[in-house]
Image 1 (cartoon, rainbow, N blue to C red):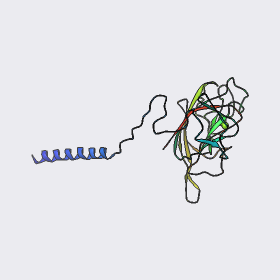
Image 2 (cartoon, helix red, strand yellow):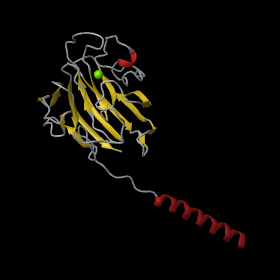
Image 3 (cartoon, protein in one colour):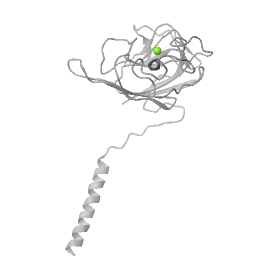
Image 4 (cartoon, protein in one colour):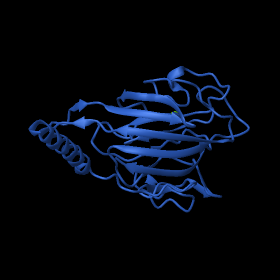
Amino acid sequence: MFKKAFATAAAILAVFALSTCYTADTAPTVISTLEGRPPSDAIVLFDGSGLAEWEQTDGAAPTWTVKNGSLTVSKGPIKTKREFGDLQIHLEFSLPAPPKGKDQDRGNSGIYIQGNYEVQILDSYENETYYDGQCGAIYKIAPPLVNANRPPGLWQTYDIIFRAPVIDAKGSVTKKANVIVLQNGVLVQDHVEVVPTGGRMGSTESAKGPIMLQDHNHPVKFRNIWVREL
Ligand code: MG
C-alpha cells in the first residue's frame, strides 16, 4: 500500500517537473508570413517604392534607378543607412538579358554584408569563371556548393543567414563572421567562416555594419529586399 502511494506520488511529481520544464520555456513570438509579403518582423529595405533606406557610400542620395518595382545598378555602390549585426537577409536579383560579356564581365554585382563580406552576384549561367568568383561564391573565399543559377533575365533569390564577427575590447576578432547562403532555395554556402573580401567599404571588421550593393558597371536589377535582425 505504502509502495503504491509512493509510486503514485513519484509519478505525479515527475509529470509536474516535466510540465514545469515545458511551461518555463518562452513561447515563440507569433509573426505573420503571408505569401508574397515579407515576414511581419522584417525591416523592409526595398519594396519598389523608393530608396529611403539607402545612400551612396559617401552619404549622398543614391543615383540608382527605381522603375516598375525594381532597382537597377547605376553609378557607384549604395549602402543601407542602418547598420546590422546578426542578420537574415532576403533579396532578389535579375541579370541583364540578353547576356553581354564573359567571365567576371557579365552580370556582376554583389551584396556586401556589413560592407565587408561579398556574396557574389554574377551571370554564372553557362558562363565560365574561377569557381570562388562565380555566383553564390563568397568572393575569393568559397565557391558555391552547387551552381544553382537561372538564365539571365529571370528573377533569382538569395536568402542569407549571417553571424557577425565577435570583436574584443582591443578591436581584435575573437570569432570570425559566419555565413549561410541559399540561392533559389538551394544551399550554396554552409556555415562558412569569412574575412573581409576585395572591394569592401572599410578597412576593419566590426560588430555592426551596413549592407552594400556593388556597382560593377552592369545594369543588374534588384527587388524585394528585407532583413530580420537575429
Ligand atoms: Mg561582384
